[in-house]
Image: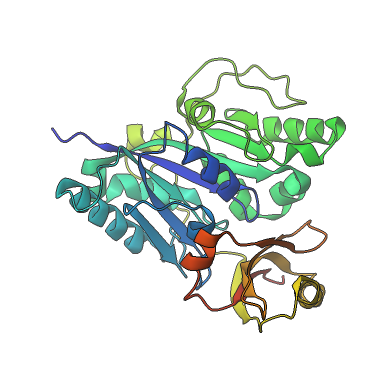
Amino acid sequence: MIERIPIYLLTGFLGSGKTTLLKSWLQQPLLQNSALIVNEIGAVGLDHVTLGYASEASALLVDACVCCTGLPGLHEALENLFWARLHRSVPRFDAVVIETTGLADPAPLIASLQSQQFVRERYCLAGVVTTLGAPTALQTMAEFAEARAQLDAAGAIVVTKTDLLGRGELDAIGRALQRSNPATRMLCSMHGSLGAEEAWHAAARTAGPPAELPGSSSSAPMRRTWRAVDQHGAGSRFAGRGRPVHGANTRFEALAAARDIDSLRRSLDALIAQHCATLLRMKGIARLVDGTTVVVQFTRGDRDAQLSVASEATRLATGNMPAGVTLIFRLRR
């Protein structure tokens, strides 16, 4: 009997704080000896670099989403990791962490882990955690089917950036989540403060009183919503959904070297203003004329782009990457 390797699945809508949490979690005992698969929907990946994860047991899947067109690539990555682990061409890892794109519907991915024979026999799903950014949580839940699908698949929902809202606003989010996802554990985090052990323990538990989000008074028993796939056959919970249709598209915008941070910010502010009605996310790297590398991040709800000078490790890792940003737009209806 082959001992199956656990898979920890981390999902969440664009800009909801997945990478911030994961960067912390990969340094903690539960996940520090894990292989990592990062999926990004743009043609140029950045998350794997900003995570600062240097293990050889990692894979980057770009320009495709693992819930649809990227599924074959995910299966291939899992198969390659298994054989590399078996033949000791990479250090032995205890688990695999998959970070999906912010537009992924986890349901087809979860079903595929049980329907693809090689993967099913060698891996098992250990839990699903979904992040939800507090500042735009109610709008995200109301307007984006992808986000609702991510919440529905979760064993635990982590509401992030809770320091940016007051108690009353957090109460409203708690009540909305209890209405829409009453059988899912809810936790909260700020600046990546939530521990990996707490999050994944909550995602894996099948019963008991829930951890409470401010504003949540329900004591309904929690369960692993993904578990239905494992118990009742591949895709039973997700039959009939068909291939996900993402309500967004992407574009890469090259950036010329800026004179300084201020001139870079002005260029990015103009870009954001040009697309403010439909821009959901922007991320990438920029370079100044003096050779400084700058990491660029923007999420809907932000006032402007967040700019940070790259660490030496990030600068080296992005040395061959083109300077520019991936823009993710909401499709006009």
